[in-house]
Length: 297
Image (tube, rainbow, N blue to C red; front, side):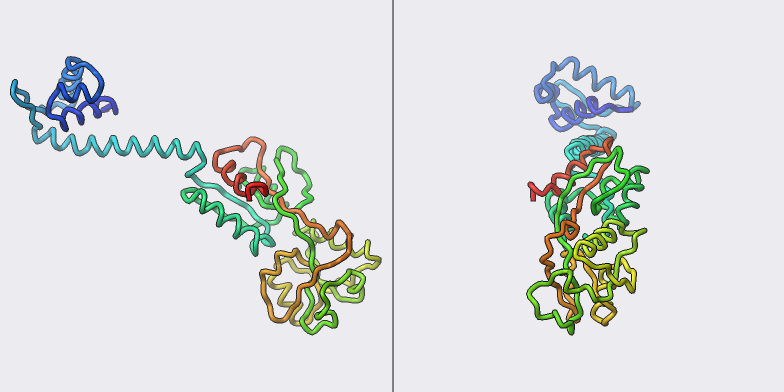
């Protein structure tokens, strides 16, 4: 097998067609270079260079080897550069889990920034609940998760809050509060509510119930759903009212209005975090975290 060093020596001689100039180019003495070319010819089994006291010429076999040697050296250089870029987190692949409710504003913004800064890192996206993402992280199916807090069972995981938002009320456009600048939860005590199922989106389910309890009422729940576009459409059709994360405003719908909620309850405050394994600080993960960091944004 031809080493990169021998190939570089042969290419230098083949391009210079002069052992003295090739030796100077390689920063080595001429006798070892001449010996290296002789050993190469023995290894290949054919004469690669014609030598006289007046000239050095490539044989047909030497011309063919020169072409392939250049290709092999270029491939070696590309491999080395790729390894360096991967170590710097500039190329590679990363698998990112995300909760569906961040797909309307936060996730597109993060991905746009990430693609701008790291265009050669391929991103594999997987929508899943926060609980499913924790399981996927621990089983090494994803590298990073974008989840809603609080999270149970985060041993061996790192958690960093990257976004804070609040619940807003989504009302049908014909609602009697549609023209109000904002609402308080007590205004909605008599409404029929949609709610996120506890087994899929436990954090939003429990926060909604606690916020209503603080406002002094138990909500009348008529429907469970977990896809926000469907919930917005159902509100427009008169199937009830729902509290959703404020990112839902990105879903413009002529049949609904979005209202801020003026209650001081902390249960209306929502936190979004990135989660990753303690033992996975690969360059790709580090690169994504640098984009997701609120301070960096």
